Image (cartoon, rainbow, N blue to C red; front, top):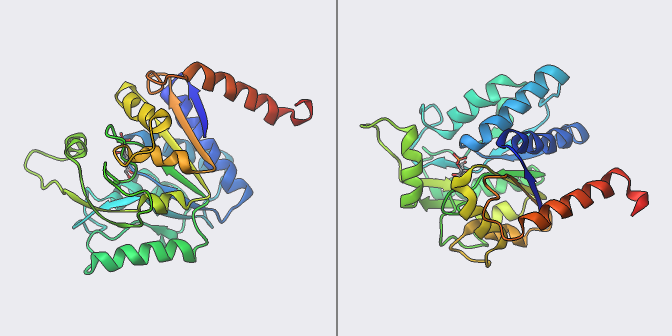
Amino acid sequence: MRIVILDKADEAARFTADILIKKIQSKPDAVLGLATGSTMLPVYRELINAHRNSELSFAAVSTFNLDEYLGFAPDHPQSYRQFMKSRLFDLIDIDQSNTFVPRGDAKDPLQECRDYDRLIEEKGGIDIQLLGIGRNGHIGFNEPGSGFMSRTRIKTLAPATLEDNARFFGDNEFRPHLSITMGIGTILSARKVVLLASGEGKADAVRAAVEGPLTASCPGSALQLHANAVIVVDEAGAGKLEHGAFYKYAEAENRKLLESPGKA
Ligand code: F6R
């Protein structure tokens, strides 16, 4: 894993956005895996700015979101489809018919899950999968206990997730407790995965994912199995890493190598 520790959350978001921007520049029809959640907002702002200021075009890009609340139609104000529309899709030149989010209102949700995995394959697989991480180590809505080989399926939200997501819902509003989520196996099939985490509240999850044992108790630890995983964290999120100083040194060396490969 490449572990990149940056001082501030906005630098970490910019670094993450740059990875996506470079991919789109080198492969205009890139297939991106996207996430929702507050950590992603500054990343999406960077992508929107790149579109406006440097005319980065998303016209040929396809996207697959990690998850959606089961039961929510795409036009539900709290659906992840609406999150993506208002935070990114409506603000760039993407062809919305190339943006995929599981249908929470599918008549046959199990078939929807199978179709979602098939569609990803038909599009040639995901070039870069963007990920956040929950306080409990979840990626997508793969809560503790999720199998590392799992594909897109229905998952029950863990109590910690319900608590964390309560902030997005009004007092008397219905709060979904089920989701359709890409599986960990689906995520690991992406050619590259980039996990972004920021803030002290994520420090335990980051430590468990990066340095802990491979365990279903921390779904993020599955990323240790990926051959091309980048973990981007701010200082606060990196605060509990045992080998944080080493990762910074290794990353500095890595950059020297990338800048002048001949000198190695
Ligand atoms: C949402 C998703 C989740 C979030 C995670 C962190 O699509 O995949 O795994 O990435 O819950 O959420 P925030 O960024 O709000 O802390």
